[in-house]
Length: 500
Image (cartoon, rainbow, N blue to C red; front, side):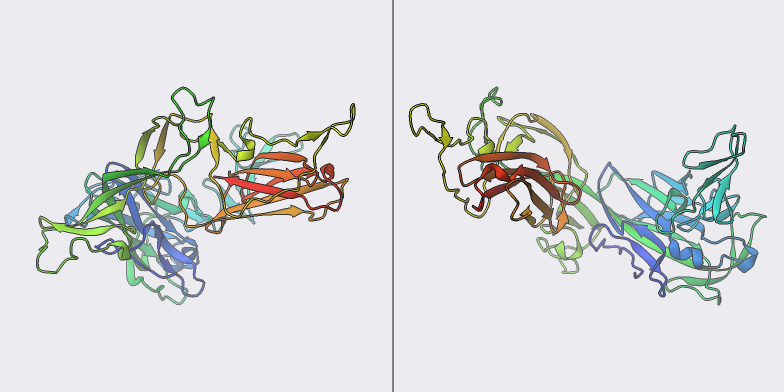
C-alpha cells in the first residue's frame, strides 16, 4: 500500500483509506478511513484511525527503556478547507475512551497512550496480545475471576471443588482491529464545505534506528504518559489527512419504468399487474472555494464535468458569485419518506405461470365411456430467451422510509446481473429426484434474497411448480422435484425465474 492524503480540492473517489505501509511486508503501520468521506449537512460521519499491524514490529520511543510499542501521542484536528478556518469535531474516542474536543483538536496522549497496534490492547500500561484487562501467561491470556464469575467471552478454569481459580481467553487476532486500536473522530457540519481531518503522532523505529517511509525521524520524543512516568527517546513522526465532503441536498429526481395495468384504490387484493422499477436519486451541492475569480480562467468553467476527480458521473463545476462549487453530486444517507399513489411498494411478485387463476392445466381426453381421464401429451415449448416483467400484487406497503446509498440512490446498485440455472443430475433416474440449482449475482458478486421460481414441464403434459425459494449468501437457490412425473427417456423442461 502507498501513503496518500486527500488534497484541498477534495479529489479522489469516496471511500478507501490512507495508509503508511511497511515496504517489506506491505502491512499498514497506520491508516485512516475513509480517504474521502461524503455526508449531507446536518448528519454525522466518522473518520477512523487505526494503529495497524505494522506498528507492532517497531521499537517504541526510548528504545528498550520503554516497555511497549504502538502509536504514541496521537492527536487530530479538522479544518474547513473551503473557508480556510479551524473547525471542531462533535465527539471523539481514543481506544474506546471518550476524550474532549477542545478548539477543534483532539489529544489522546493524556487519556490513552499509546494506542496499541492491531492484535494488542492496553493492560496495566502495556500493549499485550490479550483482551482489555487480561495479561499474558505463556501463550494464554488470563484474568482473575470476580465473585467466582468470569468475564463474558472467557473460559473458567476450576479447581477440584468446582471453584473458579482463573479465567482464560485466546490471544487477539493480529488481522482484525478492535476499539483498542482505533481513534474514532465524529463530525457533524452545517455548511456544504470541504473538511480536512489531519491525524498525527509517533511510531517506533526499526531495530537499526531508521524510520519507515513517509515518516520523519525525531531524535527526542517526550511521551505525555506512560508506565513509570514520562519517557523520551527517538521515534518516527507520521501524519495522515482525509477529506470529508459535506453536501447540501438540492434536488430529488423520481422516475419509473412503465407499469403494466392499473391497480384501482382498494383493489390490491383482487388485481395484479406487471411491476415497475422506481428510480430515485438525491443530488446536492458542495462549495469548494470562496473568494475566487470566475472570469479569468483560473477555475474550472461552469458546466465542466467534475466526474474525473470523483464527484459522481453527472457532477459539474459551477463558478458564480466568487465561489467555486460542484453541483449534481450524489447525496448519501439522505432519509426519504415515500408514499405510493395508486400502487404499493415492495409488492409480492411472481412469474406469469404463478398468477392466481392463470396456471395452465392439461386438457383431459376420454378414450371411451367410463374410461380413466388422462392428460393429453403436449410437447413442451420453451420460452424465448430474455426476460419478462414479473407480475406483482399484494401484500405490499403504501408508504416507505428509506435512505439513499453511496450513489445517492434508493435500491440496488450495479451494472450487470448474472444468472444461471442447471439440473443436477442432468439425467436422473425415473425413481429419483432432480435438483434445479439457480445462481444469481450482481457485478459478479453473489446476491442473496432473490426470489426464485421453477416451472417443470414434462413431455406428457404434467406440470409442477416450485417457489419461491430465496438465494442464500452464495447467491444460490435450489428446487427439488421427482423425476418420474414424465415418461422415461424424453426431455423435460424447467423454466427458472429470478425476481429481484
